[in-house]
Image (cartoon, rainbow, N blue to C red; front, side, top):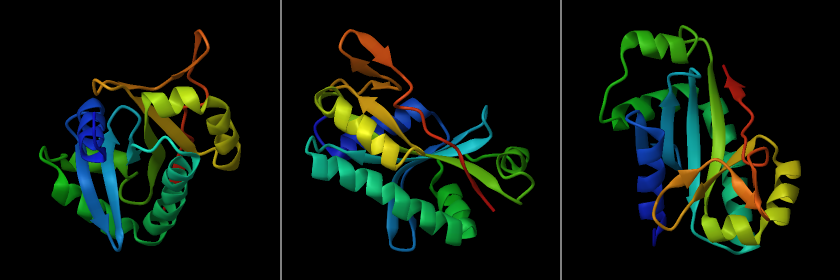
Length: 168
């Protein structure tokens, strides 16, 4: 993975057939949006190649702006996402995912390089205290995505978990 474009492709591939890239709502462009049928929720991912604290922090901050955009433009978000899908979601699946069009659940993530996750682990833990709803996806150089980071010799999946946000 050499660019954010390639990173978003890798993340979309990992999230499955209901993933769409570059979903535009207002002046926001969401790198990857996917529907998780099993959890009946959506995932929104901001991809960042940066290994600098300011670049990673910008990705976390963008998820806050995205959350506010979706909260105020939920219908636009669902319409834009549905138009970008290569594999359509059935009406029944939409009903499940949106609680009969009354509300939906969404998880926000930042996708970061393997190096950023290993070099900045304590910084990431600190950032999670500020923005605990945001999860982390570690993207390896070969494009494989992981939902844990390495803390020395052990896996830490807790720091990568996202908290679900409900949108009405």
